[in-house]
Structure formats: C-alpha cells, structure tokens
Image (cartoon, one colour):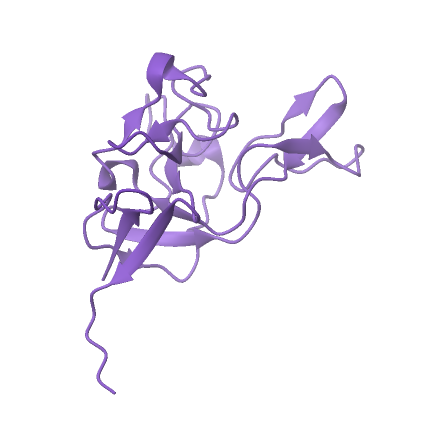
Length: 166
C-alpha cells in the first residue's frame, strides 16, 4: 500500500492506494460515459493508482504527422490549435488516481487552469493545490476526455508502508 504526500509540506494527499501495473485502457470516451452522464467513468478505480508513462498535460506541441493525427494525450481527444493538431509534451510518470482519492486538494483561486465544457479538461496545467498552496495535481473531468486526477511526480512523493525484511 502506498500513500502520496506533498513534497513541500509533507501532508498526506491520498489514503493507502494499491498500484496497478498500467493505467487501465478506456475503450472509447462515449462507451466509458454512463448513459446520461457528462463525465466518463473514472479511469482508475478508487483505492488504486497507476503511473502514466507517456507525456500528459501541458505544454502541447504540433504533431509531426498532421495527416494522421493522434489524440492530444493518452485517453484524450484529438486536439488542434491554429497551427494544427497538437500532442502533449508534458511531464511523464504522473500518478493517476481516482479524483475522490485526493479529497483535500483544492481548485486554484478563480478556477485557474480549469477551462472546459462540463468540468476542467486538464490541458492548461495544474489546476489543483495542496492545502499549503502548492500546485500539485491536474484534474481532468470534462465531457470531452477522461475522468482522472494526475499527481505531479516532482511535487509529490510516495511512501510504501509495507514492511521490508532484510
């Protein structure tokens, strides 16, 4: 079991969580959304976490192959700017958790970086803060993408409470 903590103040951000070998595969956003719901089902079940090994979140850069674009980030939609289709050049190894497994995180003042239709889409960078004020996570909870919370791998640290005998 692993608990994630704020690297600045040391407060526990999550309860004990169990590691998944990979981020669960979401078949497609429409089938992942319960009938009548605005959000997809959570990517990671409560009580678990997974490491996103691919770049995730801001910043975004133009894709090399504009004729065969790929989603802007894992489990996300195609994304385009005036320059063309873009893909994440964000940090790797974010910790993906169920949004309800980090209840103490707070939206940034004025809902900064929380643009979206039905919730924050997670494309503008961290949009959740530790109670001490550190921008520590990005919530993706819009109708156009996955429903997941990404903890920053630099601004958080993990403690595995399992006993290790030598």
